[in-house]
Every structure is written in structure tokens, then in C-alpha cells.
Image (cartoon, rainbow, N blue to C red):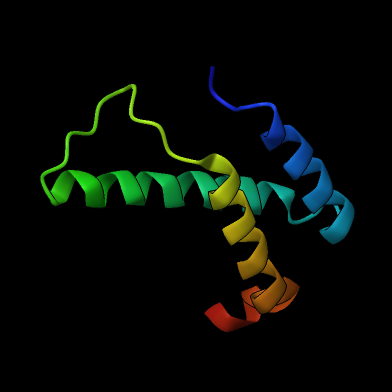
Length: 79
């Protein structure tokens, strides 16, 4: 039970809105953001186990919003 029923639909909606090119970046970024949030929870002393649930849809939406703000020109920001 990794992703719920709404997560693939949200990914499809993000792909329809932004195109297929940013989807790998959004998925990877959402997963890394989830890992960072779990690390922060662990650092604050909260129990983080294999069954700790994080809302992946919210992470996907956040990364899609970041992609909308930064856009495809993000590579130029790194130079």
C-alpha cells in the first residue's frame, strides 16, 4: 500500500498540465522532500518507522508548484 488511489491521478493531472518532461523531476523531488521531512521528524524526537505515513499527494503538489515557479530554466540557476 504505497500510493493511494488519488496519487496516480494527481500525477496524470500534473503531467497533463506541465507535460511529460518534468514528471521525473517532480516524482524524485517529492520523494526526496518526503525523506527530508521524515529526517526532520526523527531529529525532533518523533518516532519514524517503516509504517510512518506521509501524504505523498501533498508532496507531489508542492513539487509541481515549485516547478511552476522555477520552470524549465532551473538549470540556468545552477550555473
